[in-house]
Image (cartoon, rainbow, N blue to C red):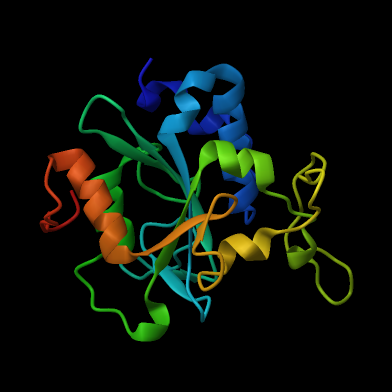
Length: 213
């Protein structure tokens, strides 16, 4: 079964504003139901030192044509081993789920826009297997000073490992641990685009697809 058929959005566990856990649970589904496929999935954290990264085509966008600016965002990248195909799984996009990675990059990242430095995106790429082994979140980042969650947390237990109760910030931080077995590697946007377009077209040249269709 192809990745476009196997992991449908409506079949997955989703909690609004907990993108890192939504992707964790999707990775867990892959590991449980198609373990041999897990090596072809990469978790992608997107942020920058200012924690201001624009994304278009998000369900939280308030006006058509304008981006939402996240402090960080997380999606899952699938790269087929034997064909020029890659897909992005983003629970918060208005694009298809999954979406061809080249289409996702053109329409969600808008590489045709010259962004101010404070909005330049960096990407942390973590093998899905490593993410399942090491990621932990006690959800304290979503608690206000009054002890109330900014958004309701998932209804399952917080994700923890034997070593960690909370290491979310290590994934969001694009300055430290830039080449780590645990936290993956950090690349600039041009390197992510080169990876995606080499996979989908056989070339690392990024071509403008024009207007959304």
